Length: 427
Image 1: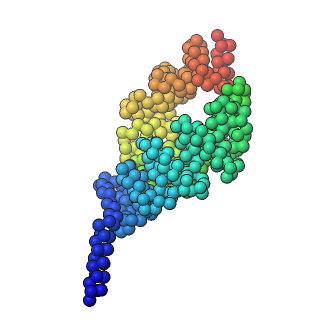
Image 2: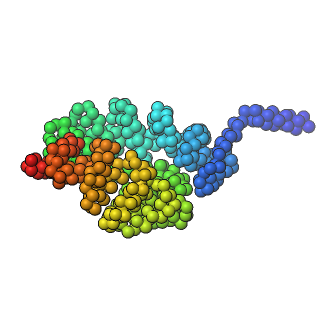
Image 3: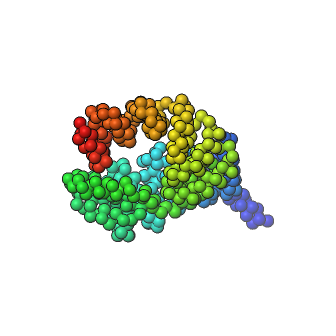
């Protein structure tokens, strides 16, 4: 009997000790989802339920942080990633995503989180070390950045992002020959080609090789945007971007990449899902204008303006679609309506100038081109269009001044040089 009593006493003491010293169940954050897109609200509530069901799961807290980071819940995102790192201290995803979430608001802490993620990954994947090196470069911590770029190159000697990063450091240090050598190895990679040509143009300019510099600059401007380097953890987190805003951003990204059919499909799906939303129609019209498909652009933009009749950008793009169809008088009426809404928009004045020229209303065209230049003195097409109009009226002195100013903005523009020579010959 004594033994039974003693065992019960020991159990009671042990239980009391566990109750006294066991870790507290972490509190699940309270998220106000009242005004959120229903798809976003549902996702957040489901993720919160997962955390409540497994409050000591690093994966559950990490998923919550990965969701919240897309919807401007900064404090709650930070708390979630801190909990994730507490319960899964060896998982590099959580300090990495934590760094991305706070990079613009707390760059020093973000750097430390990237350092921690880099330690844990050992370059599998390599994006934490690459992003760390790039962030260090942006903050002027070049010596530490160089170390990480070199470590990437030790693993993969042809790593194009590391080559470009190191080339930029060598350029800043004035070691132009070595920078050029590094660039030569990444000029043709789709992840670095455009950026590498831009750096090469600056180096050749500094060396006084003007033709080579201009050729590199032209190549950079003509190349497509560099592809992003593979980032598996960020790609995983992107899955949690849902709702209207995310769909618009994705459609815009498709347009920027030239994936027109995919963008069109995404936007048409949005017009069905959000029938009272004007923005998908605007993006669709803008994309069709870029493709010079005026009738299709017009249809989309008229629907945009039906839903949002006070949209200056809608009027501007509708006018573009009409001008592409040579319906100049209709375009003028649309542009006039747009200018009433936003009289300080250079694009509206420029397009009005063009439309007036096509209709033979040169005085009105000159007035609008002058307004366009007053609003944006660095827009070269306004300089050239106004110079042509003035030269047509034998006002060559003013035309020459405009072209000289345009050449100051773009010294290598052969068309501007040819125009200026022609006007000077006529004087």
